[in-house]
Amino acid sequence: MADERRLIARAQSGDTAAFRALVERHQARAHALALRILRSPSDAEEVAQDAFVRVWTALPGFRGESTFATWLHRIVARRAFDRVQVLRNRHARERPDEGLPEPAAPAADEDTLRAAKLQELIAGLTAAQRAAVTLYYYEGRSVEDVAHVLGMPENTVKTHLLRARAALRAAWTHALGDES
Amino acid sequence: MNCLAFERLLDEGAPDRLPAEALAHARDCEACARSLARARSLERALEAHFSSVPEVPAGFADRVMARVERGEARGVRWLALPSALPWWTRVAFEPGVVLALATLALFVWRGNRWLAGAHAAWNALSAAPEWVHSGLLAVGFGPLADLLSRALASVGAAPVPVQFGVALGVAPLLAAIAWLAWRAGERLVATAGAR
Image (tube, rainbow over all chains, first blue to last red; front, side, top):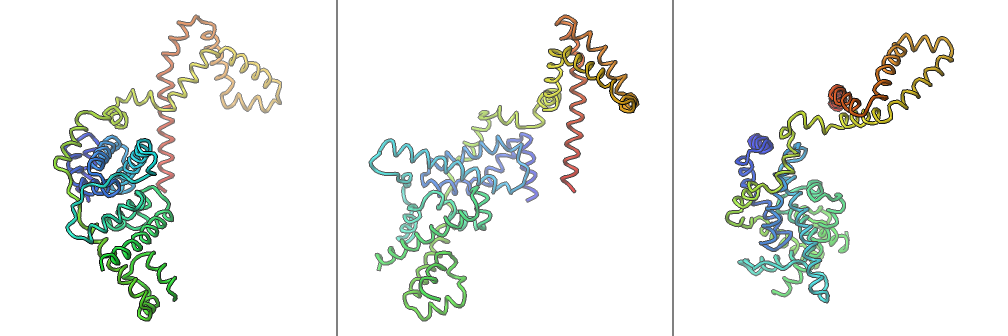
């Protein structure tokens, strides 16, 4: 932690080597969050890159009121939500008769049928639900933390989690029924 | 506990942390026991799904650093970096300095009218009760007002280049006073916030 604070301080004063160390330390989780919200590797990489460039720009003003990871994830989540909106609008313009689907899914790399099914079910959630579920399960964050990262009221996060779980549970039950 | 309440508990999450009452219900109700088993299997699947970190594309950090070093948003960062600007530039951006300079400009532009107003006010004050008049003189307002009146009356009547020269000469002094006042104000706020 002290090491990270030192890196942040050095990066704040313009040390690009220190910033690279921060990027390398946080890239996996930032990229994973973007990928889980967007489900498109190319969009996820672009969003994660944009987020890091934004972090570099805003770093001099970072006061450490939240952890660096929380701050970074908030920027990633915001950018990913913006990208989802752009993709939806583009999709609606290009194919107005097909409603408002989520962005296209990436090539699957699941190794079990259940994992594939779960992937499919998670893809069916809204971007905000996926973000809440990702941070709650993957990051192991509390509802309060998730609310902080996503910039939403805690009750909204609880609602997203509740609806996501209900939808996943219903679909999971259905999927298990299909299997048996 | 009924089946509906049990289902709601499962939607709220944590099937491994259900209250004893709910577990007792699941033991007696075959449908809810099935729901619980499925909820647990979903929870395990979610944990497994989210514990696998997708691989970061190769060269990701290099591409980020290339964008950073290429200078994307460098101007914005440069402005955001407190030590990036020389002190005299930062002083010029301080609100107190801007306010002082704007006031000075207004004074140069309309100063003679203000002075006329001040003289009228002073004359009106002289008609005020004696103790008000002597009180103002005692705190130094009278001589100061006279001094300013004499100094600025001539500036107000002077040609524009002279006014401009006076403004240039006085501006740094006013800027320094405003700067000190601004810093003192910040210190007061910081001290109050630290308590």
